[in-house]
Image 1 (cartoon, rainbow, N blue to C red):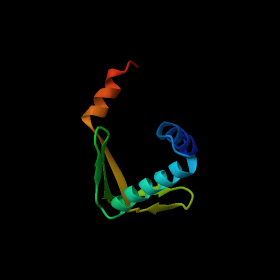
Image 2: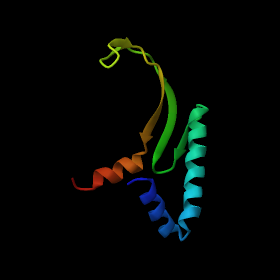
Image 3: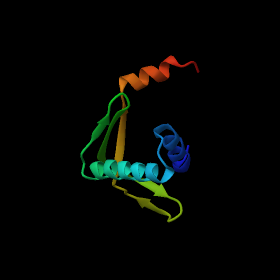
Image 4: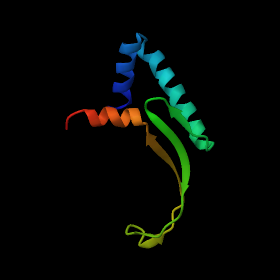
Length: 93
C-alpha cells in the first residue's frame, strides 16, 4: 500500500476529503519525524514504540567506489507491542 492508497482508504473511513486526509497524514508524519530527529521516542498503544539510535560505524566494502566505507548512521528502531504480536500470531499462515 502506497501513500495515495493509504490516503484514499483513510478518507473513506474518516469521511473526509482526500485533501483534508492528506494534510492530516502529512502533519502526523512530520510530527513523528520531528520526535525521532530530536531523539525523542514515542509509542502508539496496541501497535508499538519507535525510537532513534545511532548505529556505530563498521567496515564494509563498497564495490562501486572500490574502497572500504565506515558509515555511521542514525536509524529508527521499532519494537512491536505484545497485542500486535499476538494478533499476528493468531492468524493462520
